[in-house]
Structure formats: C-alpha cells, structure tokens
Image 1 (tube, rainbow, N blue to C red):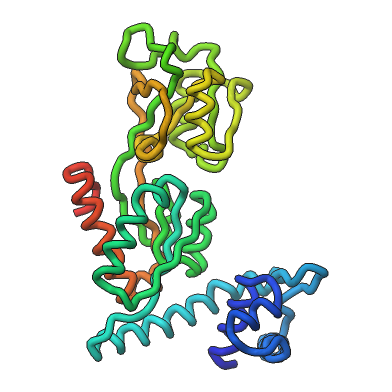
Image 2: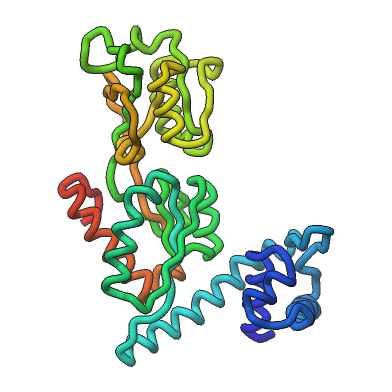
Amino acid sequence: MSNFSYEVFRAVVEQGTFIQAASRLNVTPSAVSHSIAQLETDLGFPLFIRNRTGVELTPDGAKILPTVQSILNLEEQLTQIADNINGLNTGRVRLGAFSSVSTNWLPPIILNFKRRYPEIDVSVMQGSFNEIVAQVRTGAIDIGFSLLPADRSLVVLPLVKDPIFCLTATSDHPHNGHDMTDADMADKTFILQRGDYDRDTKAALDRYNVSTNSLSYSIDDQSILSMVEAGLGWGVLPELALQKLTGAVNVFPFSEPFARTLCLVMNPTTQKSPSVAHMLTVIQAYLQAEYGERCLFD
C-alpha cells in the first residue's frame, strides 16, 4: 500500500465521486478506480458503496478513515519540518469555525497569518460545533473553534468567555430598566438559530423557564436580529455574534449572567505541524490584542 492510495482514498471521501477525485488529483478516473480497488484488495474489505450519485463509505471504510488521515497528516508534517530546517515556511492549515468566528475573527487572523507566512495555504470549513469537532477528530481539520466542554481525546485550549444577551425591539424594555428578569421573560417568543442553539443558550432559556413551544428558528444571526427589530419575537445571542450585525434593537443582559466559553480544538497529531504551530501563535496574538485580560490562555 502506497501513500498515493491513501491520498486517493481521502480525495474520494472528500469529493464524493471518482471523477471529482480524479480532477482534484489531476489523474484519470481509471487511475482512481484502480488505486481504490488495489487498496481494497490489500486491506481485505470494500471501502465504498457505489450509487447513482457517487460513492459513500462502508462502515469499515469509515473505521479506517481517521488512521489514513493521520498517516497523511504525519507525512505532511515531516515535509513541513524539513522545509523549516531548510529555511522555508511551507505547508497548509485547515481551520474549522462556526458562523460568528468566521465573520469576526477569521478575516483579521488569516490576513495577519498570510502577511507573515505567505507560502502556507489556509483553508476554512464553516460548520456547527459538532461538525467541527468531528472533523478535527478525524484529522480533516487542523484547528477548530468550538465551545467547552469539548472532546477530551483532543487538545483543547480555552480562549475567552462570550457573554450571552437578550435582544428586544426598541419598544421593549425590562421592568427594572437594565436587565432581564423572570417577569420580563414570561410568555415571550424567542427566535433562535437552530444550528448555533448551543448548550449555554439553552441553559439561559431553561433558567427563565422558556418552553420549547415559545421557540421559533431563523437561518442566521442577522435574520434573527431583523425579526426582533420587526417585533416578531425576542432573540438570545452572544456578544461575538452581535459585533457586525446591523439593525435597531435593544441589547440587555440577563439578571443572572450567562456566557459560553469559546475554545480551540486540535488533533494531537496535526497539532505538532509547524504550520499549525504558526497559526496558533497568530490566533493567540490576535485574541490577546482584542480581549486582553479576558483571555483564558497564558
């Protein structure tokens, strides 16, 4: 079994078809098919189920994916270390982030990184918290932004606490004028983003006895704010998500403060890559400049 077979295997998993994998690798579809067939023979079991739209992993194929990914990551890590010894800064960093981090943190972080390391490629996958952790676990993502608590099998670095607020139309105010109490929250409809309806948001709503019948959902944070502005309900959003949203709404804290803890998750293998180490340094420098003493890392 050669590493090329592993590269083909990964490409087929990522692309979903032999033809797209061949295009990605700049080889013929027959070369991809032959490589997968040889790998299946060497391993002794089928890796993919063929269907009309492409292929999907067999259960056995899914079991070996993290190991194959780890082998390829280690090979790339070796190349990067050799390049660094020879005075080159090459490689790649694959980031995973949820929407508010992608919008607010990643643009300046990636810009700073590319200024320092122009030869290192950076890619970004946006997804839910669970999707990001799953991709880091298999080694498909090098650094993921997520929330505590996180998978203990991964390297976890707490970043900052992100306070959670209540959004209302400009005509709505808490009775005491400064924070939301049980009386304010009673019988209100709340608009949430289903994909980012995280544990800490749920804890805040549970604390104030908001029933699931009082919840409706929107596609993204900006849509939530627009609906709140129109008086269709109240919103619950963290500080980071509010940074670049536009609209005329009130933002109030809860009488009992709530916050989510943002963190980085990294695969123990890919964490050792020089390019990942460079990116981690840039991320920490950016957050230190933005949040100062609020940062949870040393």
